[in-house]
Image (cartoon, rainbow, N blue to C red):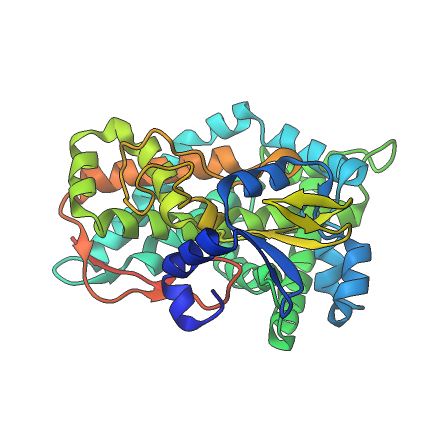
Length: 393
């Protein structure tokens, strides 16, 4: 999994691991790796398995001591549980309600059209990089509209968000920490200024809604409000970039499925779910056992690190018929890509809205879309996606 070959195609090795040792302890990493779907789902949904928090970080990851990125990450919704998590999450869930996401639909369609206009101009008679022209800037534009980031600031914040997301690496190098510190510091500075501006001149965006929160009486502190915006921005585009590129790549790698989808566009939502299952952007996530338990017949002690490997779970033949096949008509497409339980992704509806809008417009505008060279995958193990995806129309 952690080799260049494994990053390119981890699925054969993960299948062998699931068949031979579905609950596998790695002394090197110090974690139990789960590769069966039911085990992964049960851990993610079980309140007795918690996300690694600040106390865990201080004990297990001394490299993070005193770093702004560790301070941010281990105080965020991603690394808090129970009441602390609910307190942070409640506000974001309210502001990312079904109504607000639905209100973004027209804007998402427009942003998709603008991104595809740029791609069409660049791909006129030649190959163009779909990642750089569409898959990467589109989610940044969408989450920028949601938060209220002016278009001229988004590209700079995208680079800072890329740096911040080095925190998602399961094993962080000194370079990862340095980049994450740079990203967090820059985003905190930017969103501190944006909140100040929205208090003076509120508009209809998430930053204005957060800026209007009372400073006491159960509300969030100023630093917490800033960090919510940092998290929503960075997490709101990074995984979606991977989802969009992976979905288009999967469809074009199976031209018969692309053609089926072109004839039956009502299958677009199912195709998006199938792409998340077949090769999703989040290959694994970590939980900590709060009590001794048994998983897949293996005793797991209290305090153990447990890695749910969704990339393996989504190819489990016990849950999916012919799991290595990519089929947009699949009906057994339950996915764990947005997690489960208390930490189910608050942006899942927006990500799905964005993915479906893009696929529909691609099918309508570029029915002959095809690969035009070798794609280049991103480095690292925390997220799957592309750095380059050349396509031709």
